[in-house]
Length: 90
Image (spheres, one colour):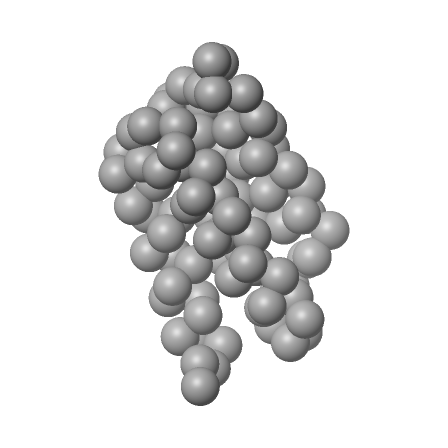
């Protein structure tokens, strides 16, 4: 069983890997986005996410970057992850 600290570490790992360019291809970024969404959803459900509305808005921006494989750009994905990281770190 994972506690909130474990889940935050998993989330941080996913986000940090993405910001470091580990999901340079569209498929990897798309899968990472879904994993991030799952962890955020779980944290929100436990009441362990400070500002759920802001986190969801930031997550929407992450998903916007993987909306179309033809338009995927790593730099935009990384910027969206950086914004998300700032919000969930509060």
